[in-house]
Length: 83
Image 1 (cartoon, rainbow, N blue to C red):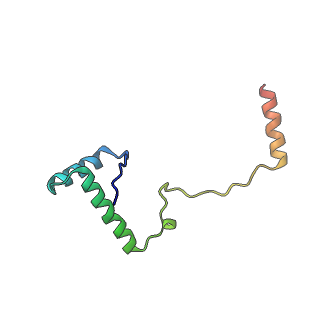
Image 2 (spheres, one colour):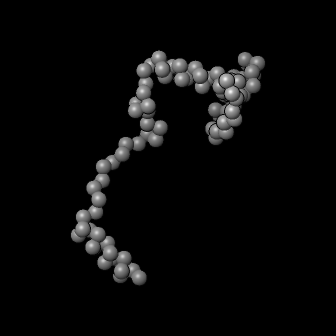
Image 3 (cartoon, rainbow, N blue to C red):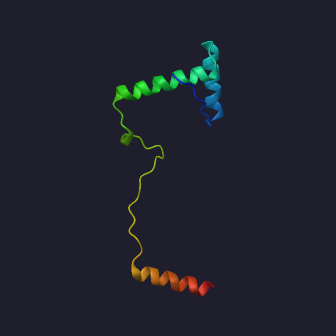
């Protein structure tokens, strides 16, 4: 298996937890991070969570209808006045 570099920005509190975990287990940050990520992926697989179940944005998309021709005309009129 090839080893690659992954640069990730994380909260400093989380990094400190990782560092402490690594120290307790006599590991480096890279080994600890890889091990914990593998455990997390195994847990997700066992829980039966699919990609569709995960919303990393914690938002829902709102269906918005496009502007009507009448609204577009009114917007153009407003924009012309501002020039």
